[in-house]
Structure formats: structure tokens, C-alpha cells
Amino acid sequence: MEIPRESTTDVSIGMEDPHASLLLTSMKSRLENLSPVSSERCIYRVPKRIRDVNHNAYTPRLVSIGPFHHGKPGLKAMEEHKWRHLQNFLRQTRVKLDDLVKFIKDREERARNCYAETIALTSDEFVQILIVDATFTIDILLGKVIPQLTCAIECVYDRSSLMFDIYRDMLLIENQLPYFILGDILDFAKSIAASGSSQWPSILELTRVYFNSYMQLGRASHPMRRSEVNHFVDFLRLCHQPIKPRQTPRENRKFEMTRSSTELREAGVKFKVASTTHLLDIQFNDGVLEIPYIRVSEITEAFFRNLIAFEQCHCHTSYISDYIVIMDSLINTPHDVEVLVKYGIMKVMLANNVEASTLFNNLAKEILYDSHVFYYSLLCEDLNTFCKVRWHRWKATLKHNYFNTPWTAISVIAGVILLVLTFIQAVCSIIQVSGSKLA
Image (cartoon, rainbow, N blue to C red):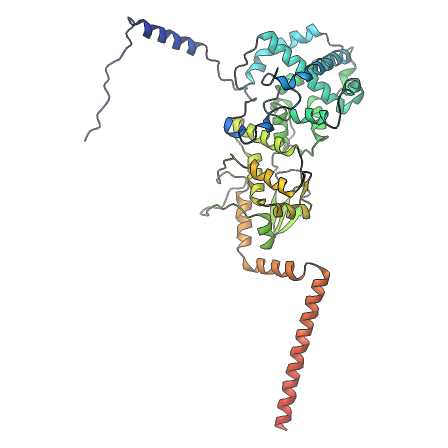
């Protein structure tokens, strides 16, 4: 039976209908005013399904950077301090404010294109935010390398709390400035001959020193260029990219996630802290699972959540998300955390191991992964294959139950010797009895 086709008769809206005419005009206006989708967009609002898991992890506590959180009541107290940093930056660099305004005005359109949504601010408002927030950020970064530049200002901060909150707020994907703005302003200041800033480090060096003072950064898998960095979150993502390419899973095998660290240990897997500083470089060779050291602290959740959000909004790879998925598989209970702590793989700076296990379990929520492109697919296959060999489990049970301390080992050996001697004595007795009967 032939499938009936839709009528090809043209249908037009009668323009004699005033309501239809208004609708057409309204729709045309809406289409004409749509902002073009820029290929430069890299700063996003966190999607609701991700934010709802823990909205606090994406919200600045102390300072707004960029337009998304500008002017929010809880962040206004820092505005005056940001202006003081602008004043200090102008004084130290001898840059004239009118020159800086013109310099940023020329870059306004490109900066707007970096935000994934239309910024409903006038040109003057947006440029002012860029200048104040960028010079504040650069001044904070410089303070880590050349403390005397900002010491007069930073004395107003309680370093044990406020400086840490500033660092934390700079990790948030919604709280970012385009990286080229920071780099261009710094280069502009360094280009002024009368300034003593000509020998200042590059923006890449400043960024690395600043974040490295709070966390251990891995080396990027290749020499990083400023042009490939979108913002601070992207910089941190690039620092934690794996060195080795993803290995293709073996064909004709159904994928299974690996077991918890407690189960792996019971199955005979040995744990060892890896020598590499690359967080994602987890390896399994000859029965030994090597995992890079990780410190779990108050900042860990915000750090990973914002990297994951950026990956899901922007990137074609999901290495950070995959790392959290594999860690969630290794950590199901506080006992699993205890295993990792025991072997020096993890240092827990939270209240207890319960909080650490809960953190990783919650981080994995709303992460979707594809086993065909999952970075640790082959690792999981190798671990599962190892665990299915019964001898490995028997050997591990023997070691954990009977040779876990020198005293138990001595007791077992003594027991075995006693058993052997008893057996020999019994055999000798039987031989002796048999011999006497024959006689």
C-alpha cells in the first residue's frame, strides 16, 4: 500500500489578517536579532542537571570575576579591593588608564564572543568589568612571584581564609575572564619602556606558579602555548591531560567496570603510589596497580566539578570525567579509602574517610561515559582478568590472613614445622611397629 503523501499545495498566511502580520513581523525581528554562535565561546553557565547536584561548588564565595556573577549582593564587599588592585597595577606599571580603556575597547567584541550567552551590559559596563577584574587577577598572580608588589594591599586580607577563597573562586567555570585579555594586558604593561615590569614573567608562568602554590600541577602533555588556553579552568585541564593516548579496548569483550580497592586487594592486586605527577596516569602491570598521589581537601570537589562541567560543555575529550568514574569505582566505602591511604596513594584532609568516599561517589553523579571511548577501558579489562584467576585470590588470602605480620608468619612456620615433625614421628613409629612384627 502506498504511503499517502502530504499535499504539496502551498499554504500562505493571509496578510489581510492583522494578527498574522504582527506575528510575521515579530518572528522576523527575533530572527534578525539572534546573536551569532561564536566559535570562540568557552565560558559557560553550568547546566542545571549538573549544578543541582551541588550548586555551591560552582558559586563564588568572595569575589566575582567576569560578568556572570558581577554585582551579586554577597560579593560586593570585594569590589573596593578590586579597585585598589587596579590602582596598584597602574602605579606599578605606569600604564595610563585612558590607554588601558582604549586597549580593551579594541578587544571588547572578541571578549564578548568568549561567553556562551549574550552579556546584557553596555559597552562601558562590560569594558569596566574586564579592566577591573583582569588587573585584580594579574595583581594577585604577581603577588605570588613578586610579593612586594601587592603586600601593601594584601595586608587587608586574612591569608588563612580570604586568600584561599580568592584562589577557590578562580577555579570556577562561571567566574572566568578570557585568557587572552589577561595575557594582552600583561604584555601591554611590559611593553612600556618606563615600566619596571618589562622583566615580569609571562601570563603562563604566573598562572602556573599561582596554582602550583595550592596544588600539585602535572606537566602538560606538550609545551603549552598561550593561544590554546581559554581561561584558568582550561589551563588546569591542559595540565592534567594524560601523556599516553587512550588504548583501544579489545574486541568481542563485554565491558565491565573494575571492582573496589578492597575487592581488588582481596583478589591479590598490589597497590603502589605512582612516581608520576600526572594525576590521570593510572597503570596496571604484573599485578601492581599504580595510582598517582592525590590530596583530598576542601577544594577537591570544586576543582573537579568545574573541570567536569567545562569538559561536558566544551571539550571533545572527557579525561577528567573518566578519572572520576574510575576513582568512584575504586571507592565505594570508607574502607576503600583506607586502602588507598595505607599505600600512600591518597591523603585525606577532610574530617574522615567517610567524607572522602562520599565526595567521590557524589562527583560521579550525572557523568555519562561511553565504554568505547572510556580512557580506562583497557585498565578495567586487565584488572578484571587478573581478579578471575583463583590462584591470585588464594595467594592474597594466605598472605593477608597468615603472613600479614612477622609474628603470625613465625607462628605459621612453627606450626608447619611441628606438623611435619609430627608426621615424621608417626611414620617412624609405624615403621618401627612394622619392623618388630616382621621380626
